[in-house]
Length: 319
Image (tube, rainbow, N blue to C red; front, top):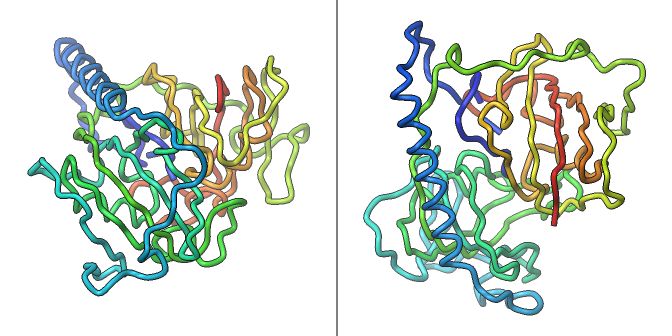
């Protein structure tokens, strides 16, 4: 994540990137065109998702016969990712790491247990490709539209052999993924041309009246919610958020973009997975997320903000 961007998601999500600074303001006509392009991209994504929507199968989907290990005819990349094309695609171009993809997928552990599936939910998933586990970021760049591929993703490209995130599957994971559509990342806007929301007065450190959990996450309710139930780690949530580093620099905001964001809660940074389970619908909370629950003190992902991050989050709904 660099300073700002027009489209982000924490997938596995996990939030994140921006163009080099330029002192020239963008013409109003360009901004209008950009907004129209963004709307067009959103319309296309919704159309693809609607077209792919299916009646949810009942119960878990059976694991493939080769779930325990990649077969001899699978292709292995230098990273250790293995894949096999199940159905050839109709497209000719491939997504980039920054593309926004619309997919159907099902995931199993190597003992054949299904742990997640957009197919059983009857709704495709849409997310920026560089906001997910490394195996997905690499693997989907090998696909074309209409293709269905099976991936064997080793733990170091997924959630690890001993995940610290509650509920995350461990070790090698197997995914069947169908790429329904993708779109290029929207044009990056210059940071100085985007309105930065002022940092809260307590951005540098959690105040004395904040609550700190056993993990080190600190939070404070800013506005009480109207709901009574809390999301689960596997819930898909719809939120508005703004994020700052502890020196008061805003690095991302769905509020500035004027568009809420939805994502599976177990596909984002650990601090979000834990923190949003403490919220109810209608609530607005501030989180101080230490580096080990975010992107780390020295992130390996280019552009990711380092150290403790501060987020104001408003929870609109979850399912």
